[in-house]
Image 1 (cartoon, rainbow, N blue to C red):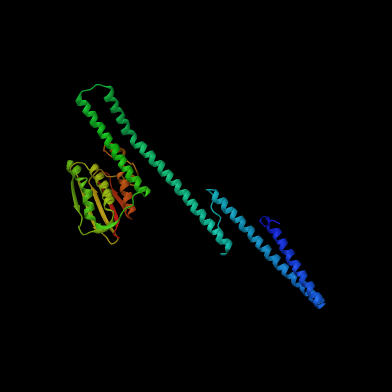
Image 2 (tube, rainbow, N blue to C red):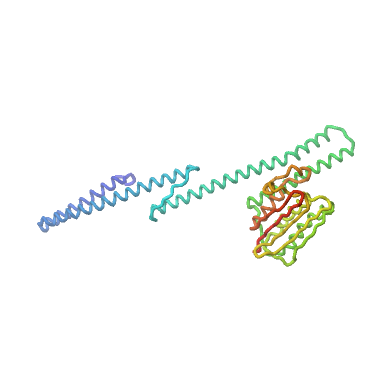
Length: 343
């Protein structure tokens, strides 16, 4: 007989026959040695009771195995079906429960991985769509400018004007790609923020250095109140990038001769950085949308920008355990509050 093909029923039958043979041999030997029928009857009763107990145990074990196999098959079917919830077992903690529990846990991990992959694909598709939408206009403008320069004769002064326009479109494309590279690296974890205990004053000064020239051109007064002794754990490069993006927006949307105020306060658990401007303000209905990638209000389409600065700023602050709040009213300016954890 091939042991590899031995079924459970056949194994039980073979075991019963083996036990029966041994029991018959033992009872027969006892009878021939003692010649006492009482011992034979007692032996038979004992064998019958043993067989009954073994049969009951085998039936119980078989029933548990059937239930477990059904549960196992159902769990595996659920693992193959992305929409069905996993089968849960609420029995006492035994061997079958442990195996089923681990299979259910494996199902949860596989489902989380599927959802994560699906979300990453959706984010990638959205990113590709955003990039294609954003580069479409400057590329079309460059094609028109280049075709005009090649096909139509024009004076040198006009050529210089077209070349300056072409240079502006190239700068916009370069700025767009740099911003997208920064964003994608942060989102995919290629770049991890290096938080160190260091003065916030130097970080804020680096951010202000990037906007002072544009502020002077519009005669915008920038007032800064930042104690030099405030020290907190933060990534200087990326935090400066986040602050610069918010400050740059403040300069863009504040009219000439306006004001921008920057104040820093140290609280018990957070350091609060308020950036207040006297610009056009943001309607309350749109304050939840300004942090979306590539969001730009239609009313300010004449202001240079691609709508990624605030999105990038929030990503940087969030990755450091902080958050950003905005308070604004139309024609009354805006105040962006950045909260960075002290620890």
